[in-house]
Length: 405
Image (tube, rainbow, N blue to C red):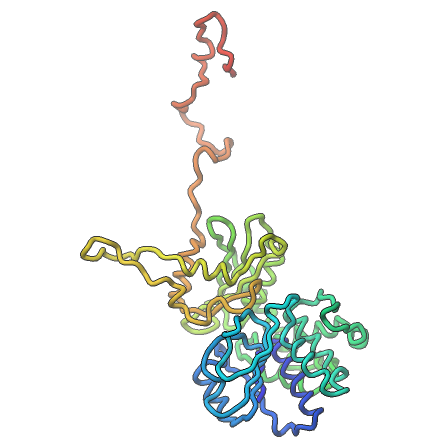
């Protein structure tokens, strides 16, 4: 059973693995794929029940993120996790093996890791799967990536298929999982049913999905942001049944510029009922700053802040204090990469996070810091020592040395 993530990197990882297994002689009838439902993870009880129903002996979990928990399924099996999201050695399901690149920059994507594992196993893997490796890697790292060491040389593959064609495939494959109907299956089928990327560009379902997503991005992207008082965080709040918040976050991260700005957050209040799905990106203007910005660390810092509860004091007169938000958010908060993180939290918890971050709160300007042109020009400042009377006073027959008009 192959359990790939829903995006270009995850689906390409799964397709590479499936093609390799078939090349090695395994019957396609013995290979199942399980695509998670909208808003779930491999740790969700419903998904665990669905996966165990396949009765798999071998389970490959690809690009799903990493965290500790029970075994992938409650049955005898061998599990391999292939991932590149930030994780510690203990952040993996029980009784599983894992391959990760999160501590080895430049961090290889899940599709690149899968390709590197599979390529030596059969002489036809490169011809069949190298383009899938590029699609998945460009899906996560962008299309300006240079395929230089330690990454494999893909010049011949890019010459054969062209970078434009493969980047168009990335856009089409990413589209279905962003739609309100969450049709990931169509993207998976497109990658698995062809040895060549060109036919994917004519897939009617993928083309319709991309048009739907583009229209929704255009509708939501013009939302005005609100900022933290220090200007380090910009938050865009949208409402959409489509998963367009990561796209809009990436778009604004490339446009907003400020010496203070460090994080762009787009929060979607309409994707899952009662939840807020949010995506964060480091703006282009802040990517070269030292020390490097970690979105994960910054989000956890904000969520760890405490403050008195707005309630009556206890009997001893001391205000009751809240349990820090960070302890109540669970494992779906601040996941992903240090430069591209996000989370799924309840609406109430998100509002509390916005309160702790003071989004939309403007600090009062000090009078002495206000622009002279904007100061109120009524009356005379009683503290002003430089007055006309002082200028014309002649205690020694001369005007004061500091007097000016």
